[in-house]
Length: 129
Image (cartoon, rainbow, N blue to C red; front, top):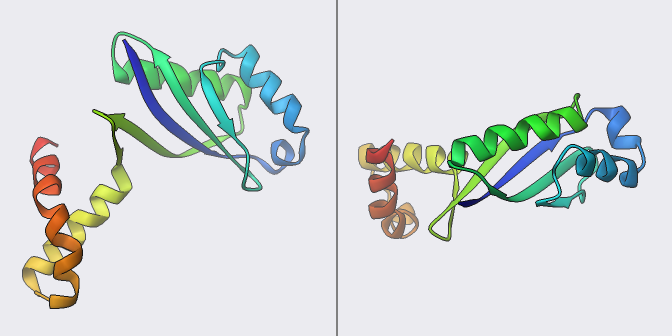
C-alpha cells in the first residue's frame, strides 16, 4: 500500500552550503527516489514521500533511515501525514487542542468563529489519540 507523508529536516551548515545536486544525488542513492524534494529555505529540506510499505509507520521509519543515511547530520524537525486526503500536522493539532481547552475555560467571542468549525474534527482526533 502506498503511504503519503512529508518529512522536514534542518541541515548541518556544511550540507546546507554544499551543492544541491550533490544532496539530491545522495538522497537518490539512499533510496529516496519516491520523494519530491524541496530546498527553498536556506538550511532546510523537505521531502514529500509517496512510499509503498505494509504500514504507515514502516514507510516513515524506512524513509527516515534512508534520509539519515544520505545526510547523516540532518535533523528531523517536522513530520506530516496525509490520511484520507487530509493533512494532519501533529504540532498543529496539539496547538489547536490547547486553544480549544483555553477557550472552554475562558470563552472569548473573537475566537469562537475560529474554533467552531474545528471543534468537531479536533475532538474526534483527540479522542482517537
